[in-house]
Image (cartoon, rainbow, N blue to C red; front, side, top):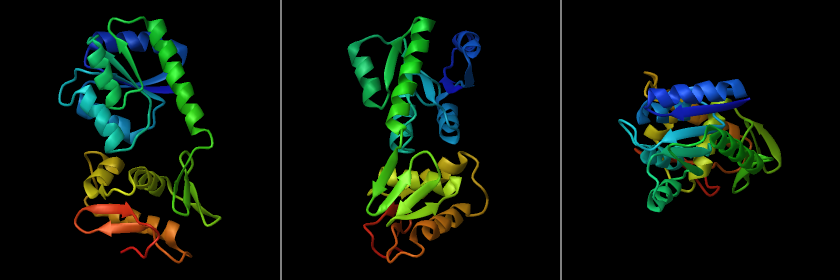
Length: 229
């Protein structure tokens, strides 16, 4: 089962994609503007995103850039656009897109390109892990290892830790973490600090040094094995 998000504001094209892809076994979601697309892509797990370039509220290039840079989301992205020049394709790929398809396109070719992107992503993620200092984190399962000891994570702390790992050593802003977990509907309480505390305990308990550093008034980052505040 392949789960795909369609971010496209043309209802006729969206209907055509549903009619073609669903009988092939795809599970589809769709968003009709860029901000909704970004929120949907970051709140759910997809095997691929079909992304129009010209969108209301947030264009596809900006959406792809934010998906990669802010949220460190590696989901394969296929740009769908009527802009056929080489410069347009280069701009899309430079923002983090994996492939580019010019409208009008063959649905059979679209299907083949989605399959190819998903295969490449699955190959990259086989036994995938991220490493920082003496900490290794599984990119798929909520687990990590530090100094040879296995660490069980919750789905939420796993998501936060992957974000920190992919951004390190740069700081992840508090607002980015809040959006990562809750989108535009954050809880009234400061639940994020509770999750950060839990993550500190999970990867720092029983070890001589902490790895998560608080950058006061801004957010958090991964430290080089020093005692972090």
